[in-house]
Length: 397
Ligand SMILES: [Fe+2]
Ligand SMILES: [Fe+2]
Image 1 (spheres, rainbow, N blue to C red):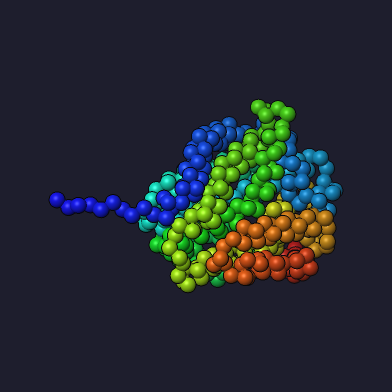
Image 2: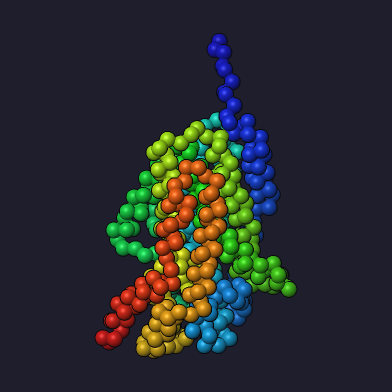
């Protein structure tokens, strides 16, 4: 008979404080799970029922504080408020499709060590929740765009996790291919290295930090609503989603910051991959947008959807009028541009704090040097150049 030796307890099992944190975060998330409520919201949503109401605090409206907003009437402002919801959560869908996949590959990387079942079970629950979040966001966005435009504006068909995470990025075909290759490589590497897997959660934590700032405000609309039972369903979705996400943010912090000390020291290659993934995140977050304050979209990529909105029945603008309005909103300093840039600056400072305790992170990443290269002057120049190109065909008509 073979004498089986007990498996050596891992550093994670010996780290009672971190093990406890994982167990508590998973248990509480399971107890409070908002999946059923979100699925029910998606089933009950009828645009007709809440088409005349705000769904977010007023400042969370599309193009808020731009010249367009200033001249919009009350019903146009309501639609801009609802379209912020549609645009914002269309971006979140893309981020969460990627999250589901990298939760799995990273869980595979961590499961290669003893005693990581708890971490993996926690991530399984989060992935299932993301699928319900995505379903709710898709359902509302598609119904609204169908009713308002009869076509897609911000929403899109289901996509795979190798697509650009930012749905309106500064990109071209070559950049898309390069990003897809990087994402594929990261998936392979994270599934085979516990360190790289754990550092996916640092990147996920960074991405969530900015989301947390915005989503907390969006969730307050429902939380403070005087008649929650009759509050617009999208506002309830913002609230339930934020509740689930607060547990996801906790797990990013626990795995990215605490579990890392229970792992074998990283090799130079693993450190390099960890830093490269943070640089990728910086690249994704190196623009700001006055269309959707709080997202790092590349403004020129939004010219097409904004033009569509200005020409639609909502604003009924002619070609020239629409073009002039876009020039006013995107090429001249206004309150919206300053406010979106401030949001980016706040994000940079919070990212800095988040990365500070991690020894392996290099100075470019610790200082968020890539993100800091963006400023208002550069934003205006980019827009001016791109708008000239965008409106050229219109002038020829
Ligand atoms: Fe989510
Ligand atoms: Fe999440």
